[in-house]
Length: 280
Image (cartoon, rainbow, N blue to C red; front, top):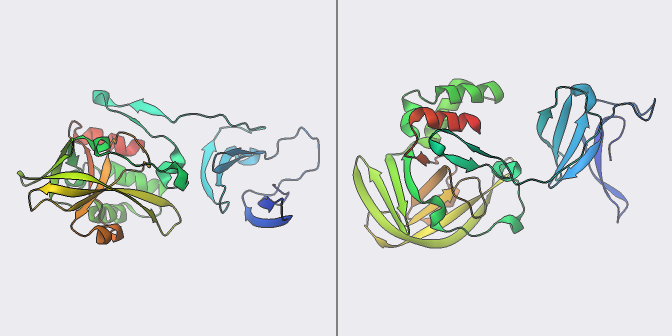
């Protein structure tokens, strides 16, 4: 329920109690004609969507906690609102590299446990390159600038943050069947990996992520015992990029939150990778 003061309220109708309230917009008077533009609300999965006529926006509000998670600038004064289903957005970049963003809330880390499903190693099959060299040589400077324009840090702070995140000496990874090969300075080590399930992590700001874990069953001694994939997806889907954690201690890897070497298809050049990042 939305009240005149611009507050949104959740009510437990079984207990007849107010459970959560949050200020979501400026006050709106309910006086005047019934047809005057005022906020309207509708449910869209795990979000409440609300028109805000005076601001020219549709506001997206998380069902749990009533925090705003995004806005849609409609360029006018929305009067009513309706919700329709969909399967996400698929777009194609150069070189016919296509990917599906799927549910934007899942991508941001808001999902139900019931939505998670095991994934095979084939979801990450392919030839992959590290993006760390492109951060170092300045190719990703436009990405850092874009983040600074919309985020809470300066360009230099974002570059430092991603320098820690992307940092790795493994410049290339290939995944074929159950075989994973790591390339460092042109030297290759290989392991054969089997699924070891997944773990759900809860982060400081309340969103979550899923690590899909694989354990080495045989291969070179230098190949890591465990690899853990994170690609913002939580069920079967081909990855368009991913963050990878590797080492010999499964539990310790789950504690690693600051260094997440990131890999994009080796078929993409540096400018295409920058464009892909700007798209997200």
